[in-house]
Length: 241
Image 1 (cartoon, rainbow, N blue to C red):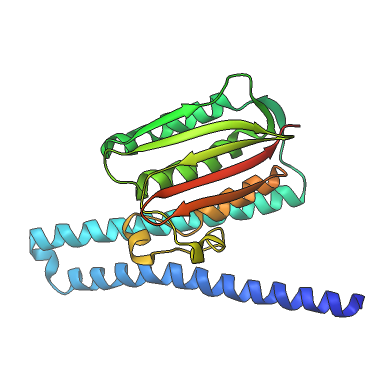
Image 2 (image 1 turned 180 degrees about the vertical axis):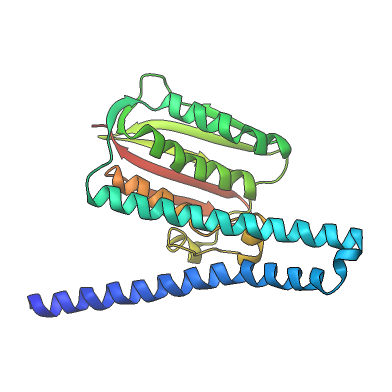
């Protein structure tokens, strides 16, 4: 029974590895192909037409930014996995309010561009056992997604409350929402609901995977509640101590 169980686990890990490599290859190939195509067009004469050349260079810059974002997110996931396996991540029992206030400050420029307000409801004495930098990154990913997929002039709420031996950090938006059939898979690497829209908005398909991994490293879990057209609420549950 042990041998069969081990073989099943090995096959599953191998399948996950193949899927991951295939997804990475696809996500990297798309911007690389576009960059190559526009560079060739410029070399063939478009560079002598200032307006066209400027437009092509802007597209190349956007695809370059996307490549960089994918690589950065992959490195983040790799670092998280290595650090958690080797127990290198330091935790401390500390208030979460300053971390969330920092997230709002970091998100303010993008939010202001769309006239989106971000409200925080968190008592100053609520504490949890966290790594402040990692928690900031996880919540920042959620807020960044909320800003991307929310309509201009809308509102995003960050709320925190105690839930038994845990705290719950909620990030709620009033954006496009997520259909039920997608909700179980959105935390998978490279899984996106609307690929064309995600690429247009600069998504890598790794942001929510990072949120899930950071939450699990803290000994917690993350859930989503959403209805199409009504927005989404992501909830991170973290141990108090």
